[in-house]
Amino acid sequence: MCLAPGRRPNSFESQRSLFSARASSGYISDVAHAPKPLAHKLVPHHDKDGGRALHRLYDTSESWELGRGGGGAVTTVKRRSTGEMFAMKTVKLDGMDVTMVDELRREIEIQRSLDHPNIVKIVESFEDQRLVRNGSSLVSEHRLYIVMELCTGGSLVSRLQAKPYSEGVAARLVEKMLRAVYYCHSHGIIHRDLKLDNFVYETQAEDAEIKLIDFGFAFEVQPGDKDEMFERLGTLSYMAPELLGKNKKRAYDSSVDMWAMGALTCVLRRKALPMFTSPQAVRSKVMYKRQPWVCRSSSRGPSGSASRTKPRTSA
Image (tube, rainbow, N blue to C red):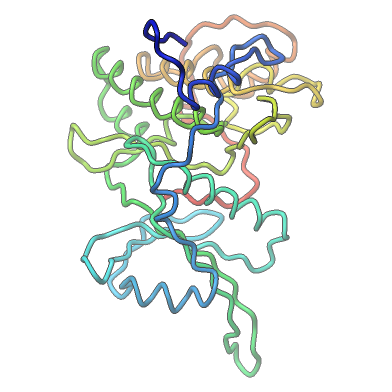
């Protein structure tokens, strides 16, 4: 950290100096704990009678479906007061165990704490639990609704498949991605699933802003804790070698996001996954310590395959 002669570091710079220490892997961590943005207080969570609050604030009568996954559907909604359109993810909480529900709430809380032009924003969330009639009996229905920025430009991977990027365009994209990742790390958040599919365009315009989505695997380093994690999560083709070893008790750190960014950059320039011919080959060759870290073409395309165990909030 460099300061002008005679200038004392402010509180955040002092904190960054404290946390910019070497992790167990030898990596100089950039994880810090910047103050939460003011926008954090402007992202409400309605946990009492959330269904009524949702329909009071948003019009869902003309919604259309944007996508559907294991956790539920993503549809459009319109803010009644302004007419502005948003995306809304509906997650069915019925039958989920307490741990999974807590993880969803934690994911929402992580995104509430981020305010960056290249990270998709959560506008507000609603939780609703009610009894509904099913034939002659009443059943409990538990739903979580997450209202987010509406991004209609498609994913980075879809644009790349349609048209290759020049070196200059790719460089500008990677700069924006790195700014988003650095911002996350500055607030103690490690994404752990960086890949082309998790960057989307705000609109269909050529110069549309790019946004980082999907914080379902994100980890928050608490103040005073080490930059260390143990869960093996992510998308195989973008996972760092330390995530694929046999020793599950060995810690890894935020540098896994940097590895993923390197793999992603390779795909942007060569339209090919780095290193090997398939995600399965990545695992087998890393296990046997054969690590020719070079870019080669992949028959599976730039998306790879992901290991997912819970619903995701991002549209």
